[in-house]
Image (cartoon, rainbow, N blue to C red; front, side):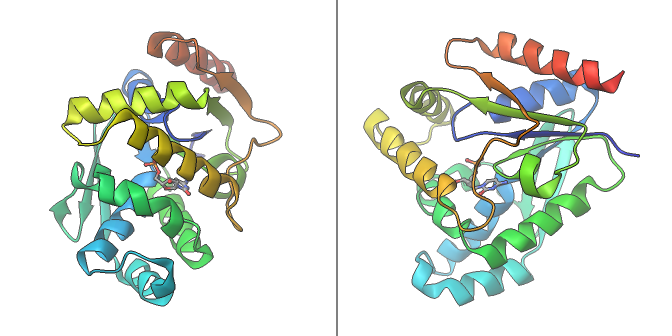
Length: 223
Ligand code: DC
C-alpha cells in the first residue's frame, strides 16, 4: 500500500517549500495540486476566458486539458499540453483568478481525480486545500499548516521578488486576503482543518523548524 502525507493550509504558509524539502529528505514524490488549478486558469486566460460568467467554457477546458507533472528530486515541473509552464502558472494574472476558478465544483472533481491518479501506487507528499479532507481523507499523515495573514503575505511577496514576479506588498496582501476568503467559502472542497490533522502554526517558526516538526510527525506514523 502506498504511503500518503497530506498537507493543507492557506496561501503563504510555506507548504510548497516544506513539501519539497521533505520529499527530498524522505524520498517521497512531491505533488502540488494548486499547480493543476493554475494550469486550467492559464489555459482559460490564454483563450481570453477569465470570469466565472463563462463557467461552462472553463469546465470544458478542464475536461480536455492535458496536465503532466514531473518530479526531479522533490522539484515539481508542470507541463500544460507538453509545454513547461512551471514559472508562468505563478504569474499575477493567474494568481488573481485561480481561487475563483477553483471554486467551480465540476473543476474540483476533475482535479481531485487527477490528483488521485497521479499518486496511485506511489509514496507521496501532496499539498493543497482539500487533500486531508477530500482527496485523501484516509491519508496516513495529515498536517494543517497555518500562519498569521501579514506573515504569509510577507513570505509570498519575498518569494515573488526572488522569482521576478511583479507587484507590491499591498497587492500581495490583498490577493492573499481574497484567496483566503474564496478558499474558506467554497461550496465544495472548502479549506478547513480535518478533525485528525496535526495543526502547525508557522508564524514564528523558521523553515527548518517547520520541516523538522512535520518530519517528526511523518516518521512517527511511518514506524
Ligand atoms: O497552493 P496555490 O496557491 O498554488 O493554489 C492555487 C489556488 O488553487 C488557490 O487559490 C486555492 C486553489 N486550490 C484548491 O482550491 N485546492 C487545492 N487542493 C489546491 C489549490
